[in-house]
Image 1 (spheres, one colour):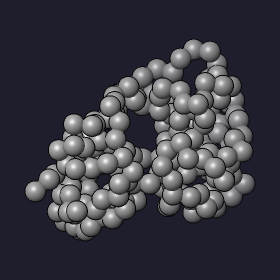
Image 2 (tube, rainbow, N blue to C red; image 1 turned 180 degrees about the vertical axis):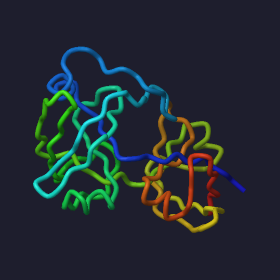
Image 3 (cartoon, rainbow, N blue to C red; image 1 turned 135 degrees about the vertical axis):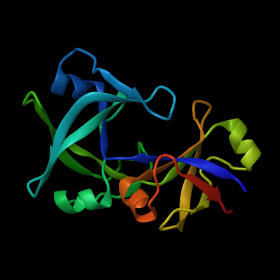
Length: 189
């Protein structure tokens, strides 16, 4: 049985350098903790995201800077904001909604696009991919042996030399399965 570790990804924002400076100034954001993927980290900075219909405070900024600002929310969050973001892999921002982002210092920006619900995906290094017979872009399924249990399909494999083997779910998916960041999922295809 192949078991893979799970990480739960709460709502968060990846800022472009330009947008980070507009919100927080030239000083780099302070690292709070490292994330499961090498070089990725949560910062101490949070913002409020909002639309005319609603807002969500305390949304964590992740680093490092990205080429474009990207806001990742859950389906549940979309109801609060009255948005219909597509389910996408990180970086695929074509035809997505915009949103207002306000820092605690009062600075704000409005992005014209960039709001997504992250597609469930498996980060995988090339050695693990070879052992598991996975290819980049392949879709797999995984079974969860938790109190609520279940099977998730259409998990997109993302192979990269910088990756650490890790299945990323959003909070809605994790809550539905009663999965935590200590859960191991069983690959079933």
